[in-house]
Image 1 (tube, rainbow, N blue to C red):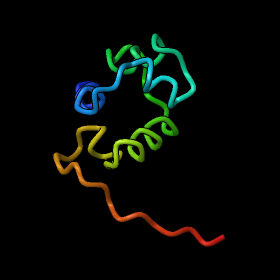
Image 2: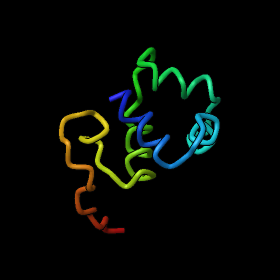
Image 3: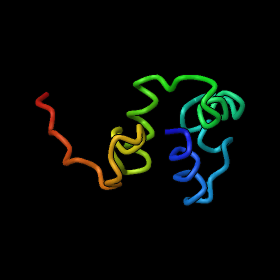
Image 4: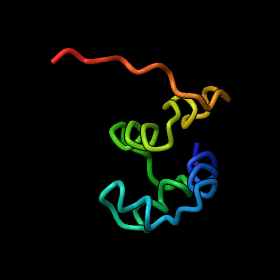
Length: 76
């Protein structure tokens, strides 16, 4: 999973600081995710999947299919 986080970020020419800002955290905090030193919370996984337009399964290395699943429309 950690390799995928880095690859997705680098493919978009983003820094760890930029992704950290997206997640409202520091660069060092985000770097811990990419290094595999800290587990990535579910809400962060969801936000990254939406940002990178992929699925949480792809981030977790459960599939090689980068395309996201169709989104559900929530009833309000």
